[in-house]
Length: 162
Image 1 (spheres, rainbow, N blue to C red):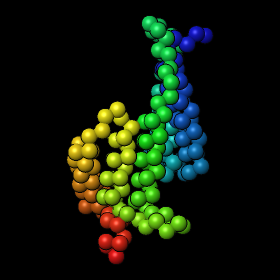
Image 2: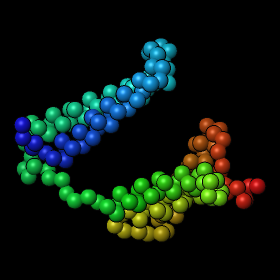
Image 3: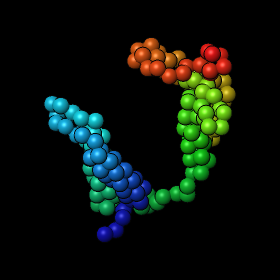
Image 4: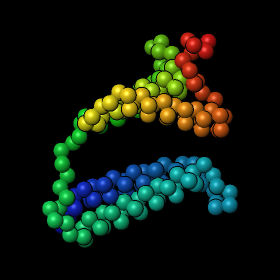
């Protein structure tokens, strides 16, 4: 068979593999039934759905003709690095690294730090826009997670709150 769209084929393959892995991992938990769902029910269904969507996209990439074959370009290393670094930074700032003496900085600082780092992944960088976005995200996250859902995690740095 001839691949008519490389982008669709490999994205479908990724979806299928990731969905299958999540569905397989969910079988380690109690799945339950539709009426009494266990902790593995949602990840199992989501993994199956993801795998089916991936299989459909792969099938489409083998049957629907494209003009140039939708070739895959080179890796976008800069965005990949900054987005992964932003996620790692969020975890470190939110919870700290007690093993090496880094204190928990809390939700607000974690969102500001992550927004600043991830915004470097794009072609343009405007500090004013990034700070406005980080402020809106911080207010929204505080409202959703702390006020509405009543989740217990540090909001401010430990050296401020004590």
